Image (tube, rainbow over all chains, first blue to last red; front, side, top):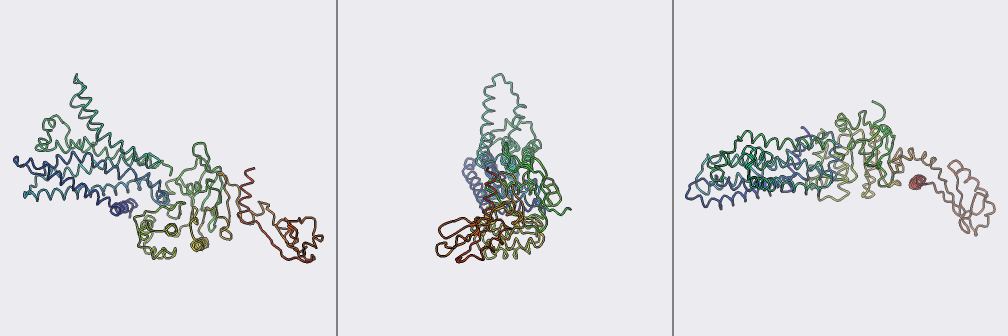
Length: 276
Length: 301
């Protein structure tokens, strides 16, 4: 068996044992359910499937939560093992350094994917059952929401790994991880809004904003979820905006994949040079 | 491949200005047990990490089983290396069996031998418990078991006996002897020199990153030039003291002491034959700890 999968297997088992999978699954399911039941009260007259409304509210909350979970999983991945001494032992085995990083990353990604899919999936099924209508077409954006959430998580996992390889202390890694999370989830958008408000001459064009949004994985996620489908865009109040957004789904997906691959490659590069 | 399993030539490892290992040459043969002695911070762990290729030397070269330890090829050679880290760190959420299985898979070893290995280090009854519940000695034993996976040719033990009870320690040295007899190279670092007596073929003393002594026990004894002390106790308040040669000096009223070299020892004892009324003879050969202290002190001057 390849060393990558041996390490992945161990990482997943760890995640199961220390209840990470269980805790995040329950958290995400509760969140989806409560948003679904509470948020669907105004839909009664409009006769919109509860899932559609849930996609809107859920994606707004996932933007905060999924990156946070990903950061918490990953900030400790490398620096923690180096600190505890397990990394030195692992490196004394016939394993390459890139195999260790990739193995651990896949393990964490599986944990995150399991939690997201099971958590949101179960909540989605429960919502539809409660409303008595099973509308298959409403599932398409919901599945996209799950996939996009996993990709968003992967991009923050990847950044977390990069942070974890670069620092020497676990506390530093935790601090930087929270800082990066805050930057992308809150500060980036606020700064952009501020710039747009301050820009009275309208120097910033729509295409410029589009490009700028690609530099933030959580904005890419928002665009993927909220502008992809007509009725969801309507609900999200982004109907007008989605006409302006010239970025298609392939471009957004590509941007998100780059957000996963690029930081991760840097993480491998720096880990190879790291002195344990 | 050369007859040396591990070769260090002119190896220096510097962190910023400080040299953790300073121009060290060291050869480890097959079937040899070498002890690495030195204070905390003398560079013992750094030396072991250099051999493992965890860190790369600033200068010089480290050869592990015929490959540069820092090279890509060495990562595959490490299948024949066993390592016991200074601070034993295992994954607390795995059980003993799972831990060993995990490491055996990484070394591409069959899992069937693992149970025997766990019984050999004496923790088979705790194999199904999580490592988090283990005592320090049990964790040390489990870590030893993982180092023994796949009958490695080179074993690197970083302070293996600290925190072990005497019985465990004895078990540890039994295993070391067995490994050495099978032709493995064993390098172990320690502070507790006294327990090395008869276990190590060679002793390397490190100080401030430099190798200050290297040799067998008796070679070190000669190098150190530490005297053998013979102390005699005379009866009747040292009445026959006048018969002793000038070299003996009075320790107290009735006991006398002589410092002599290894070669003069027998003659000195024979010369006591014609002296009347000796109550007791004590011969004190310098212990490892004495020699160790001597080497470290000498460097201080």
